[in-house]
View (cartoon, each protein chain N blue to C red):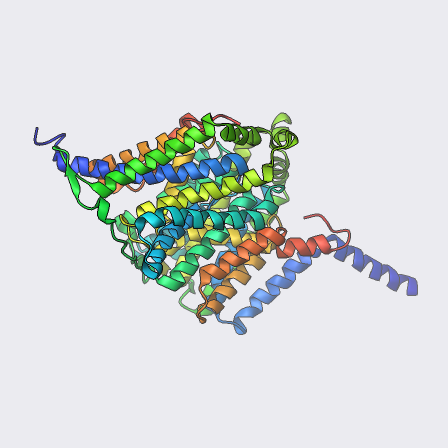
Length: 325
Length: 295
């Protein structure tokens, strides 16, 4: 009898040790489902949109070692597409999101084809320059309405069934989108494809010598990351019923870098934690007289100098015997 | 002959002059970036912010201490260079052993701090800075009217650029510098203090940005945001020219400024993005940049 108890207990420990990530994800999901009863749904939806954006960005920097400094182009660009398609063409929200994701993916393909010709710092500068081009296009093209942006975007009815005008319906839709995007990233990272990406990050010449066409892998990762960033941007446009220039600026690209850096590059949950912290901090600072960019900049400097693993990365590092990412 | 390609020559030359002025700033800034990158392997994202700080130092000197343009032309680059030395000694130095991307992220954070602080203090609207007495007025060149100050900016930045090129490529100090870029350990073994040289390089590179800021102050207004959009164009210029080359940075900067001016005449809508389009084309044809070497 006692033996049996010990065995099950032991089993429980092993099970826990084998899949703490699943447990953690389950707990997080439970919290997210209950959260709108305790917190303001629009705030939570903002966190979820940025969390998906940061996860998409992290797929590149954390798992393929590519620092894109132009992800705002996909995020904000897709927001414009979603807003225009839903508001002007009158499409249903689900098609708006599909269009936003597809356009962001196409942009990712074009950016990727140009940018993956160089590595490291150059890659960052090229993506930054290309995204600045998108910013100027967004400023000048007629359909984006320049400084005003596209305002009053209707949320519409999802699949003709769910009225997204209801805050809770909208919230659970955003949560479902986030979970789907996160699951896709999770799956990608743990697939053979993800292993090749990690190999490229660690040692690209060696991956090439093993016969992998690293450029193609990087391009696919880039397109995937851009599409998911677009999905996040499109969702944000529906939530706030607005697509504006703020989301295409290079400061936005910097912000998503910070979220990922703060949470932990190359960890699955890091970007989520980082996005939550940064969004919370910004909405707190908005009610004080402290200048937001200065605080954000200070966090950047502190993270880079003292805290390069990020919060989740540091936790994983401190866990005994659990050094793996 | 009153029209060239259907454009009045005054408009054409006017825009070309504007392009040349922008090109001078691109050249000065990308030169500083190239010098810093060559020695430190850091893409200095704070370069645009330090250019803005240079302009603000000039404005503050004039407003609070009554120091005029010519004084500021010496003092502001020194001040910005000193700020650079401090940043290098206290922060950047710790990052040489880790991935170069962290240098980029650190300087990005610094750029946010500088811009945010000045914006908090002085707002987004620009402060006017007067043209010095000596350089007021203009010269009639026959085919166009050249404001003296603008001519001075082009001449001064060309002079500084060529001086820097000469110092790096043709003097003994420059030879040490280039040697230390190739192999710092060996140069250190010969008894040259490489860490001090690295600090001074960063200080000099950002001092160039500060100088560009002072030169720019009377043309554009002194505003906290003056550097942030300029610097991305400069990054594109640097990618087009290729990071390693000093002369490449100067030539590409001026050339792209002129091209932007031309775009403003013939197809104004494209003038903002022409540099980025050229960057994309150059990357497709010659990934290392026009003057760069494949590493």
